[in-house]
Image (cartoon, rainbow, N blue to C red; front, side, top):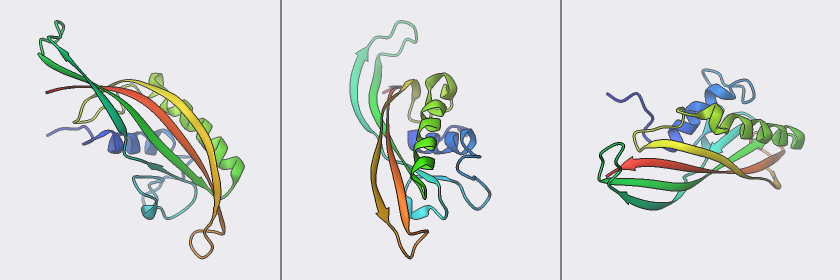
Amino acid sequence: MSQLAPDIIAATMNYLRVAMADQFNVTATNQGVWSDAASANTYPYAVVQAPSENYDLSSNDPETGFKNFVIADGMLNILIYANDSALAYSLSRQMVIAMDFNQSSGQLDSDMGTITDVIPIGNAAMPPVDESGTLGPVVYRRFLTFGYKQEFYL
């Protein structure tokens, strides 16, 4: 039985729940990092979105012996939600550090492949959202984009 996450989304959520446990107040009842905002139950939290990928097929990799070697060149988006603008920005900067490949190496691998590189692409503020009646009155959001390379075999 595999010990790896099924895909990069699950692997990223698992990694960030450990690497940023204190920042996202991760507990038994609050996982802090989700794949959709509907699962969140307290601020701050992060949402890992489905990646977009382009593929490059390589044939005959002499080091591994595999004939059909694929490199996925992907973009992974993570949104941060907080009830304070400064906190949202601070968390986004800390996430850039946590996702640095030197920190995350081996932690983002999944059943779908091996991550060979992670680089931050962008970190942008999004307009605040009025969520009166839910978790709080105003929510501040940050949108982070990370580029990655993933190797897998056909």
